[in-house]
Structures are given as C-alpha cells and as structure tokens.
Length: 88
Picture 1 (tube, helix red, strand yellow):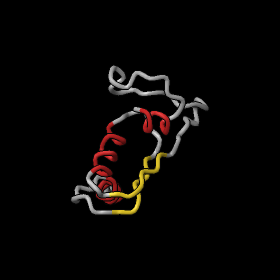
Picture 2 (cartoon, rainbow, N blue to C red):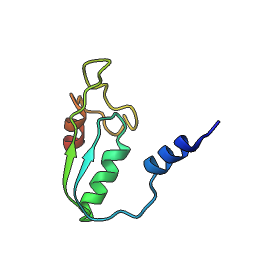
Picture 3 (cartoon, rainbow, N blue to C red):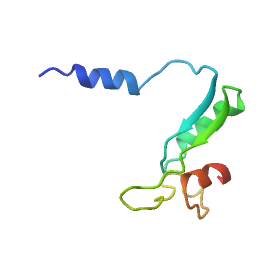
Picture 4 (tube, rainbow, N blue to C red):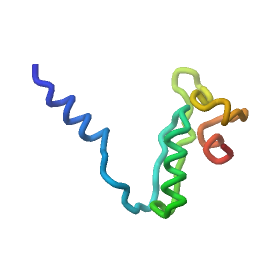
C-alpha cells in the first residue's frame, strides 16, 4: 500500500517553519486554549496585525462544548470560543 498521501498530508499539517509576519491569524474553533494562547503570543510579538477567531460552534451539539484543557485556569462561562479567546 502506498502511504504517500499520509506523508503528504502530514508534511502540510505539521509545519515546523519559523513564524513569519502576516496580516492575520485565523483561529479555527476549538476547546483547547493552546492555539489561542500561541496566536496571542505571536500577536504580541508583532507577527500579525489581526487575530480572527471563528466563533465556532460544535456541529454535533449545536453549541460550543466549552474549555476542555486548562479548565482550572479558564473557568468562565464562555458561550463560544470567540468569547473565550477575547475574555480568557
């Protein structure tokens, strides 16, 4: 079996290049704060002019499932990942 497609996808997804300056960082929806924390770090260091959270809602639950990692730190009653990102 040819595993090239998996390698090609992995090479695309798991990029390890150094960050470069961009106009905006788009944050896909999620319940784990590591991505927004890293995006905020890049923003504060001047790598992006804008951070654009998706305000994602789970298609299965028709609502945002809430913070799943670091819930002891991010313990607010957030209605969306966008609200979590801007208030967290």
